[in-house]
Length: 170
Length: 350
Ligand SMILES: [Zn+2]
Ligand SMILES: [Zn+2]
Image 1 (cartoon, each protein chain N blue to C red):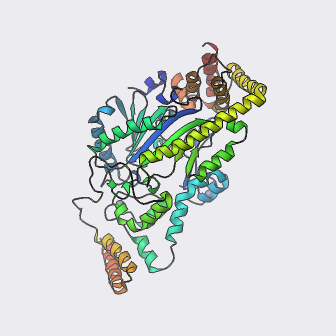
Image 2: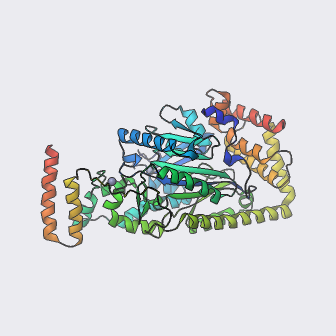
Image 3: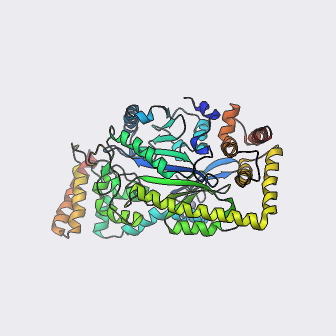
């Protein structure tokens, strides 16, 4: 969906106004929304945080991170950055390393204190579905780069390329 | 229950009763909940969405606190009905759009509502009249427990309840209080108050939630932080802030009465006069004038109109309500006529 004002950028801010007796939805890009009202500043918290935390550059680490996918729902970190929403409960395990500092920025804490469900079933599914080897390899790549195991990373990168080629053929 | 049954009924939050109801309209607690292993609504396909609806309907049937509820699927609902539900604060505007696999559960008293497949699988909401967050929490906590005995909630011990957006993770709880602050607005102190609220990481919204301009001097204040504090702590924090705002509004009303009683009386009575005699009126003007009449009633300047009647008018004069009352589609001009007629009837023949 494109911005209602400039028609160029994707709309990421959604507002409601009552204009001439009609409840009206406005879909704006962040730039136009900023212009529209200073008072709305608070709403931009999340995407600002996401942008600030990831600082995507050209380093291999960032590239690996952006391709990291949740094995359960296939949402990538790049998707999360774009949508501002996660894909499923398992994403919290997949992106745990990156979500922990994000949650700390948003809430000032990353440790839940409060009630718990009567019927707790861990978010990690107890009977793992057939894992996605590509997603697994991407996850391992991020971990290898973080531990600075570059030989392992190189191997994984080749593996990922092969898997991607196979997936494209299929 | 049929949707039209709600027309002859006053929502719990509009009753005008409860603690501090001269300043606080209503208190609301909302819990965001998701099921483990099912993609969040924006990322789920139609089959997964439909399956989720089925699981929730099943869990609801096992909860004795949700016995007197009706389950509405939004897909078949026409746009006036959907807007009607939004106007009654039973669901969000977002929920009224792209309605595939979306549902709304409401109880007969309009105290409980559950949006299914909104941003999260479940958005459970509990409304109370007046300043009453703890009472709302006590009820919603029990409903949540009953649902969690049949549904497998997505939950991790360290992150708490897992939500589509990380801004709701943890308790998944948002407590909101709707305030009527005409004296702080008239005495131009409201900017200072709102700035202070934002600094304390609370948010302020208008009458219709998310991103709405505040109109008619109504402000809804809610917590931003949902992780790292218990539900009780979060409520204590909101309550502390709300108590201060109530006190400031009460003081501002006293100062206005002491310093400019005549001006205030003039504005309030002119507002009532316009409402009683207008033949064409927009909803925006209606909200502004009703706000003044409500203040007049709260200050004892208007004696023959009670709070409940005024509260009801805020809602029944909105576009979808007028169309439901008339039982047909009305253009904007037709609505302005009907609105004026309805207000005249309600305020003249008490
Ligand atoms: Zn724009
Ligand atoms: Zn996922």
